[in-house]
Amino acid sequence: MALTLAISPCPNDTFVFDALVHGRVPGAPPVEVTYADVDVTNTAAERGAFDLVKVSYAALPWLLDDYHLLPCGGALGRGCGPLVLTRPDRAGTGQAGSGQAGSGQAGTADLGGATVAVPGDRTTAYLLFRLWAAERPPARVEVVPFHEIMPAVAAGRYDAGLVIHEARFTYQRHGLTALVDLGEWWEGTTGLPIPLGAILARRGTVDPVEAAGWIRESVRQAWADPEASRAYVLSHAQEMEPDVVDRHIALYVNEFTADLGDAGFAAVEALLGRAADAGLVPRTAGPQTSSSRATAWTS
Image 1 (cartoon, rainbow, N blue to C red):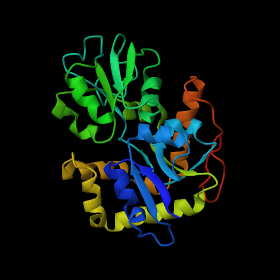
Image 2: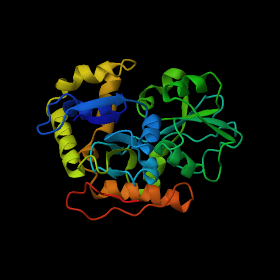
Image 3: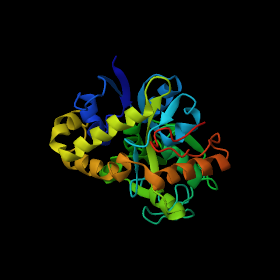
Image 4: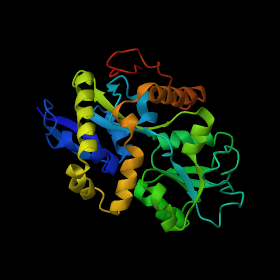
């Protein structure tokens, strides 16, 4: 039977899963793919809709009864965090703040009175934003499809916008400025990498150790022959120039993609632990010791 897989159409996901999707991983079953934004997959995973699914780490507390967290295939790293963007005329007004991306300072921006567009209410980006803005929350937050956020902020429909992924490379084209880099804030505060997107395997349907093996082999093949996935990646990144695609992959596909390792698991534990302490998510148990590291968390 075919395995159902849900990932985003972003270059990091299509690059990582190319070999698995196209039947080049020995011993892996055929795969039926659904492409969707992470806010959609977070919700679908709550219904147990897919065998393997890419979700936000922030959504794990609601999903671990039905899914195993896999130690590979996701998005976690350094220098790759979400950005809070605004128009230059609003930066420094006291409405959307005066902080600069790269400052890593938690107290340099004030969003009091502002309306902020975010890509999803259970995304890691929004959870980081809530932790960062705990003492200066915006007046209003609206969930907006990711691709609409930058144009909407530029047009004045929102005072600020929370963006991820390739927006790091393209936000200046919209005439926007970075109010804060939440990745730099997180790394400066914790010393840990930023846990963004996780890969989950449905309990009772997919063996997590086997699934981790398939994904690691898919990653290995992607790195060994990047050109093999080129057409597939570009076909799902039609609004991105090839150089942006390459920078996207280089940033988000890294050593943590092959194995979260101690630093990766510590980052996930720190994110969800801090969020639980703040009352933002249900508390989960920490990672269990396992030689396979495939069944890493329990609810």
